Length: 229
Image 1 (cartoon, one colour):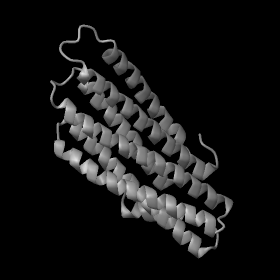
Image 2 (cartoon, one colour):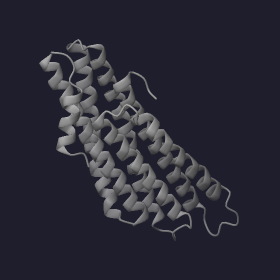
Image 3 (tube, rainbow, N blue to C red):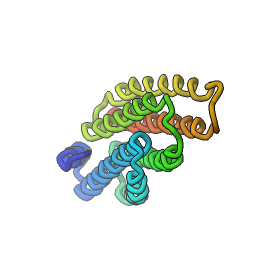
Image 4 (tube, rainbow, N blue to C red):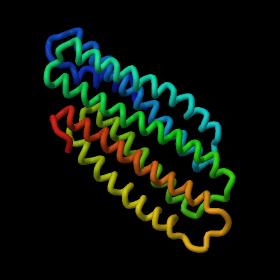
């Protein structure tokens, strides 16, 4: 969870120029981005609990939080647009705000995937656990770690974030390929195939969530360096 100190630290680091009003507005956007990120992190954890601990109450929490995530997404995009059109931002401010607008799209998509995973958990609970569930749980934990590290990178404006997270993303890609081969080419499947199809969707969503986390880290690098690494 992002602390108040981390929110303040990011707000201070992105202050550019002498325009106090612009600094204040940009700092507020930065804090909202971190608050949104904290909600998305929590929704991801709830989806994990729903899938692997059969905690269906967590599904309802995801639904409620997704509404808050969407509110932040819309407000941040609106605030960034208003600043860009009314405050004549400097090139660095422009880079920060454009990165924020792209970054919150990634967060919003991760939140949507968390809700999708919660809905799948409600269907999977009807079936016996698949032998691959432990491996899928590990994949989920790695993807959550990527998101957490990406948000920490944002609070610290870590210029090397993109390269660091990309290394973790390779682990997720390998897990996806391995699990897909096991699930899609499984022979002599007893009973109906719906749980197999659902699990393939689960690993696909986890892989996409990891990709969006990588995007976030690369956007942090863009804020600092002016390019994505």
